[in-house]
Image 1 (cartoon, helix red, strand yellow):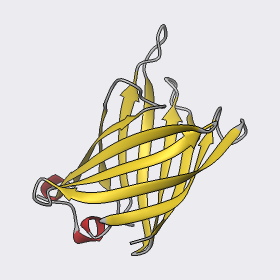
Image 2 (cartoon, rainbow, N blue to C red; image 1 turned 45 degrees about the vertical axis):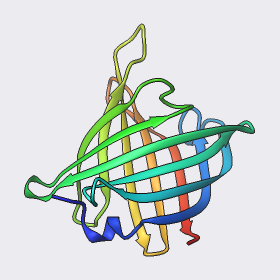
Image 3 (tube, rainbow, N blue to C red; image 1 turned 60 degrees about the vertical axis):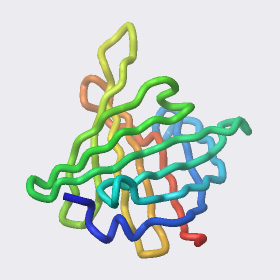
Length: 155
């Protein structure tokens, strides 16, 4: 089953800002302008978020593919980013909560130690604004804010 209309209605062009937290909210912060194109994919079954941002003036790109099965409230995502993930795609699972927040969790390798977790939450504020939060999750379960992006519709 496809994503709710509230999400597929996000299709279009967006601009905003992305804050990258190196070491959580108390660590150094990198801010940059960000742009995003959101489009329905596979006959409206999925939603593709294609975005750009910069790290120390170096252009970066990312993609987030969202899926949803309402029968079990199962949200899924595939995420890749030129800075965060580099050569691998992160597969994530989760749900849409009672407030309509699309939240998924995946994991990434951190050799030589155990894998770390990553939580992505997409919140629709209004039909014209949305936010994305990403948290890193240490092997012992501690969460730190890693990314806070806010977007406004441009077209």
